[in-house]
Amino acid sequence: MALPFPLEIRPGSPVYEQIVYAVKRALAQGSLRPGDRFPSVRNLSQEIGVNPNTVQKAVGELTAQGVLEVHAGQGCFVKAFEHPGKTDGVRELHGLLETLAVEATRLGLSEADVRKALGAAWQRLKRE
Image (cartoon, rainbow, N blue to C red; front, side, top):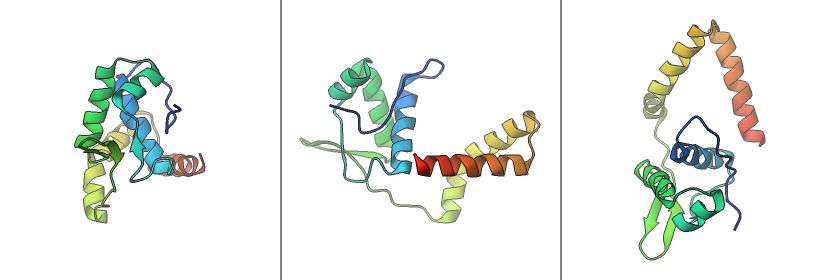
């Protein structure tokens, strides 16, 4: 069974975090959609060659974040996302945005540089 999202495990960050990110990226790109069946822990762990406990941790995190939902006796599915209002969405991103601003400043980048890079990343995400 092929993965419903691209994932290449790389050293440097926990595997479960890489799985969580790959799933969220696939949702942002539209290759995973609400209602899609999510692979079982066993199938996913075999497909990517990692311990089932690692996959279970990722599934638990995705469930806690409201990305996946478990239907008893049926498996995991991608949950329909209820978009927060703009104010709530920006509030949710506050920590990430502050981290981005701190790192950009550390690297000597201007706000314009960051806007340009963000725009390019946004376009790349939608193209892939």
